Amino acid sequence: MTKSLFLSAALTAGMMLGVPTTSAHAAPAVVPAAPITAHDAFVQNAAWSCGPRRCAWVPGYRGPVPGYAMRWGPPSYPNCYWKRGILGNWKHKCDD
Image (cartoon, rainbow, N blue to C red; front, side, top):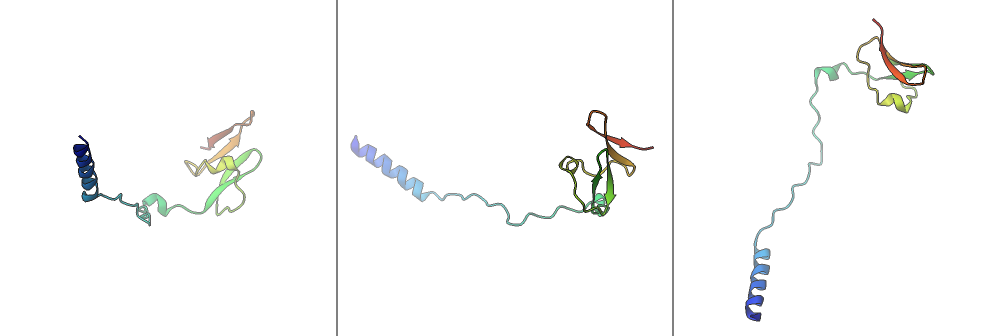
């Protein structure tokens, strides 16, 4: 019994060492650039310039942007802005 146990252990170890292992493929070191779309061609440096009651999208603005305005992204339309309501909530408004 001990011989068969020893033999099976030796065979298992030999199979583990003799079988080629596959290594995991590493991720590429350089992330490929995203394709340029038509929308990206019109993107410019701009940000929300905020006062106490209103935030306006200003092209070329490089001043401080409040944390809450950083997640808004650009306006839906050129005439849109954010306005603080009576209870302090910000509302997205667009003039006609």
